[in-house]
Image: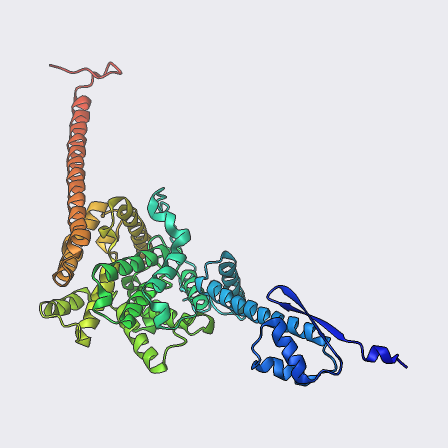
Length: 482
């Protein structure tokens, strides 16, 4: 039994109002209206506030819980705010996606995928979609290694993936195709894994071609003349255009009757293979940058990418350039056929654009290309196959390899594009002309040296014959008669 005096004692609660403690004293027999009046007066809450009304009517016999409830209410607000902020920060981290840890995680995921496919007996170790080049155990070791140039052109390799990622973000392609930024990272890593370590056709070449495409898009203001879908097609075709290149060209594939040549009926076997590997990678859910694209739109994107990659076959060079020449004088950016033809020429320009770059960057690439040519010609000789003169190490030199290519392939094509985009003359066409002059000077020096060596050889031969005819048989030394 409690004392009667305690049951009538006044009740006191303390409210935390904007950091200040307010004391509320009331009788146990106060009505809800009285309590509401006390609460509103002490905490400056309007008397019409629905929260106070509902709380007062909820339990007037346990008002000591009011302080706890109010504090809990403020904590819940804080918790909601923190949760929202955490979600925003997590989204920001995902969008920026520049963490090395995430990249390493992607690499580990790809490694696990490769190991899994290898355990199933699937072809090459590097990737299930890689082409198993059938060489019957024959390998031709190059007579010299790939030139090791301590030049700036190799220094960007560590940042190439990040640069490619930036290009997709900068052009608005990530937003346009609703790409998951992490999927873009995984796709680029898979692309890098599926370029072989050839002297020339490697991932560094892929990056150079893609970077040149990015540069031409900006230089020619293509964003104002084409759609973002066209930009995505151009960039993706550039990134994928030489996937899993084996280091031996179409001529070798056809003459050697390789698996690729048989599979594609001698019709652009390498380019068809590059397309197949590209879409095998895109078929992986974790690498499909077009996963959020409408299926019908994806069909059109796929066909356009295939068209551009197939256009990089140099056997079709004359056909494609002639078609573009017929359209360039009356070019219409609203004509789909015209735009497709332009895109084919653009990827061709980018594919063979090394001579547009400064000499200190371009020249090492010539050495790498010649090394790849020499590896093929050595193999062709060992297998009794025809050898192209421009690939024979005993017949070709750097100047002879480049002069004809620059004069009859590069300059005519870039000058045709210049009719549509005059702004490329100073930045792209003039460097090609300078490069042509550079190699012509080198050829003149080589010819002069060859001529000197010939005269010297003849002189030494004549001298040797003369000395032999006039040698004194009684002496071990030569004596000459006047």
